[in-house]
Amino acid sequence: MSGGISASIATSRLRAEGMGSNDHAVPFLNQDYEALRQQCLETGCLFQDPSFLAEPPSLGFKELAPYSAKTRDVEWMRPTELTDDPQFILGGATRTDICQGALGDCWLLAAIASLTLNERLLHRVVPHGQSFQEDYAGIFHFQFWQFGEWVDVVIDDRLPTKNGELMFVHSAEGNEFWSALLEKAYSKLNGSYEALSGGSTTEGFEDFTGGVSEMYDLRKAPRDLYRIISKALDRGSLLGCSIDITSAFDMESVTFKKLVKGHAYSVTGLKQVDYQGQVERLIRVRNPWGQVEWTGAWSDNSPEWDELDPTEREDLHLQMEDGEFWMSFQEFLRQFSRLEICNLTADALSEDGLSHWNTIKFHGMWRRGSTAGGCRNHPNTFWINPQYKITLLEEDDDPEDDEVACSFLVALMQKDRRRYRGQGQDMHTIGFAIYEVRDKGCQNVHLKKDFFLTHSSCARSETFINLREVSNRLSLPPGEYLIVPSTFESGQEADFVLRFECLAGCVLSDKDLKTDGFSMESCRTMVNLMDVSSTVIYREYDMDKSGSMSSYEMRLAVESAGFKLNNRLNQVLVARYAENEAIDFDNFICCLVKLEAMFSKYCHFLLVLLYGVESVPQGCWPMLTPMFPTVVSSCLDVL
Image 1 (cartoon, helix red, strand yellow):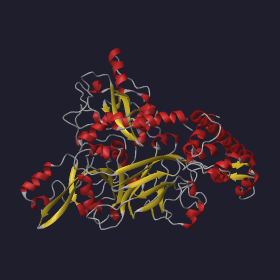
Image 2 (spheres, helix red, strand yellow):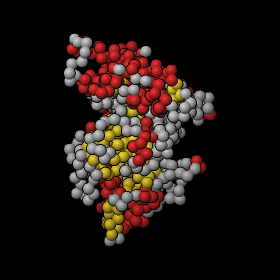
Image 3 (tube, helix red, strand yellow):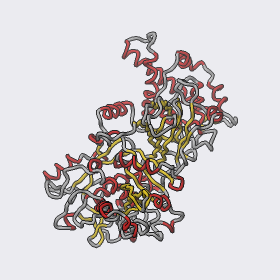
Image 4 (tube, one colour):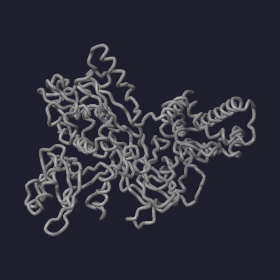
């Protein structure tokens, strides 16, 4: 369990001061770009990154593993060794600067291509002032959003090459290197180059902007999708699309009209034209690979263009970069399988006239034996998952929407799973369910199994899926609701971040991080804990009379003894006292004794420190007791 109370306080202070924002990014692996660069300039040595070595393990673990056929004869070279006139950015960063190499990360390249459409967003990721000329020291840095905070990633400029050519991302201009260096920084963030192989464009969108993404199945597209796309482009959102594959043999296969299956494209524009006396809706798409391009209607040399007014035709052609093409919107829906939209958050949309969503986020974790309950298919353990209460305060003010409801977006993201690929792990299958809490203003406590056995969800994620993030746009009437994020299977461990976005007013509270404090009756119970028959409590939760209690029932048993636990403390206790997800009587007694001892010491310490007395002044319990779970968990970290 990481960190104690002092570390938590320090982290909270730094965040309150803006650490982790894009303006004050957290140095990744504690590497300070300016300090390292200055050190290199003073010593006259080019930077060599000790945390991402120019060696085979940085390439990958399977197809790009050390000594594999694909990594044989790889040489790491600096741009200054590849060309006489290396440039960081040449003539501005454009979509044509991103050409795919021998790595299956087209999803990332599609995201980078979309990023170049907004110069302000681009330079949040690619900071100004980097060059191969002025104060060159072989060191560069890039900034990425990672699970709620921005991090600054430092790299050296040694890039993997074969036969003097870059292996992976490269620019169409042979002496431009910003895109190759950006890919290297993102590879470092995720553990290796190969960790980037295969993915969803939304990952890149979100890590470049901090935005929240949503996905549409184009076979079941909403009727107003064209309007949704138009509004998204107007808001500065990033959009990507792809064609699903049905087997591994489909990957990168080309359709009859030259679209690549399993390949990530970016959506870059919309246009309505007058065609044969009717309005034709067109959509502009870009293939970051650039070598295979749509050959159907409205492709570069199709006869449809001859029917347009010459001025309009010329205007549309001028709007296209290499690798981009137009197609009719109806054909787009037929040819592509899914659309991904990344909605940008407030700090990414500071320009006047751009509306944005209000964002609230919480960090949580699933831990085997305590908070990893699985989906509703596991009714005995589903209730132990983390729970979050949302209060929808007002309806949307959308003149185009007749629905009397609050629109919001829920996004559940699992953390750091790409970094575990080298250890044989991958994404869990995740999702969430939402329940209406009819008892308005109910006590802020973790709801138990009986509630979920007798109530159905009023909304849920469209599917449980093994992507980094699952998200859905939903609408519900004003009221109080409960969000329960989970893995599909019980007992699967992961850290996650839950983000909730809405246009109208809302309140989101974590039912697991805080309690409302202990009631006076609970305090009396704690003080007299040693007089309570722990044997009776234990027997009550030893359901099968086996002599041991399931760790999933730990929270209920300890509550019966007078302690209300948050998720973190429950996880600590289970990790400390459970064996194979079971707790025997001796460990249960030890747990209660430790809790009672911690509570007594905590109360005595605070009373002396704050009041100089040995007993609790009347009315002071509400101020003291909410801190108890944090103090106990910190003590247990050490003891």
